[in-house]
Image (cartoon, rainbow, N blue to C red):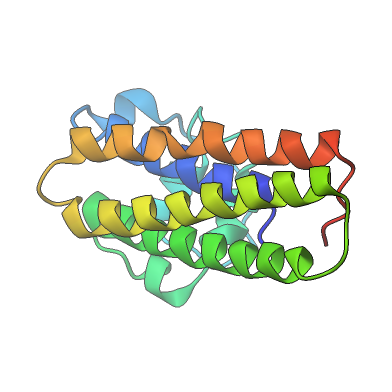
Length: 166
């Protein structure tokens, strides 16, 4: 299952890329000397070394796919990140759907159903954003920003009813 913090990282990365896309990156993304043993591109390195990213190494690892490394600009990178977010959300949704099939308390079932709906929403949002990113990056920032609180609420619901998820 893709942990909620990984999905949140995708959100932070996306928002970082596109909220700063109209500004000079040299003024916003500081030069950081991070030793990289994970394959990446300069675009990914600049993004992962940004102020909004709390765990640079995790960011680099999450964005180390060949497609992401080959991204030529911020729009292409953002589109690939959204596709990655959708794939992670789908994997998590599948895990929740499997857990729901097992016997559990009504409270656990309610929390899991909440999470299923939150992840369905996240998948739709990620897919929608990746398809309209080129047209309107400001609107897509908002579309992605509303995913985070839903996923955070899902995690809280699971913790409150003590659901054990892998």
